[in-house]
Image (tube, rainbow, N blue to C red; front, side, top):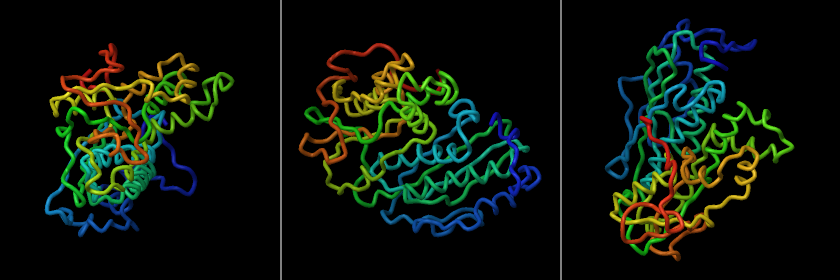
Length: 339
């Protein structure tokens, strides 16, 4: 699909555009039959939602996605875009050690956007919200020349104090949970030909290429890797890997006043090496600077504190900055919104 307004509805689907339906009918359509999570005491339908705060406080974050900057409509369908919008916000909440409880979504779109596009977008959002254990409590619609999605996420730090970036100390170890580099690889596949099937499957396993594209379209934050841990799990600092491992660990290093050194051998991924060979890319660069994987990177008191499902990839030292195998890495370090 080239643009929201260019999509045509199949037989039996809603043929209207959002202009035809109107704002309030559209709100009713995307909320019909939805079941709110326990943390939402009052959902859509009034001037504001009402959320429970069992810990007596919230963790709150917000993020925005803009068409052709954060996603492309010829690369991702509406359901994928909806899931991605929720996943990147849920990951920020979980990275604070909090359980997602509710999301509020604001959407801007052209007036000729098909209603079907919006309902599929909402289906994707609700699917990912449910995977995170939450629901969508409300939002807003406006007319916009491009598709713009703004999500505010709420979380309950019920099991522990919020986990900050500032708690890492020399002697800690660095560990990660989730996939690293796969979103960057998927972006490289799409950039090479638009779709995985356009890349010669004889050069590598076409299934790996499709897997990488799927991760780029819909990140899979491993929520349970954090939320399944006890409150005394020994995590001293944590972040989700949205901008790139080097960039996001750099935030921990700066906030904590420490240095971090990564072990490239621990970060290696043979499957990514195959994709990199096919495309002429650099698997380690995808891992270190690709971003948008929404894995979790954390520091733990020591190696014995690292739980199953987490991989030790480095250590915390006295000093400043992030190095790889003891050396400063040249080249890209991750995403930056204004470059």
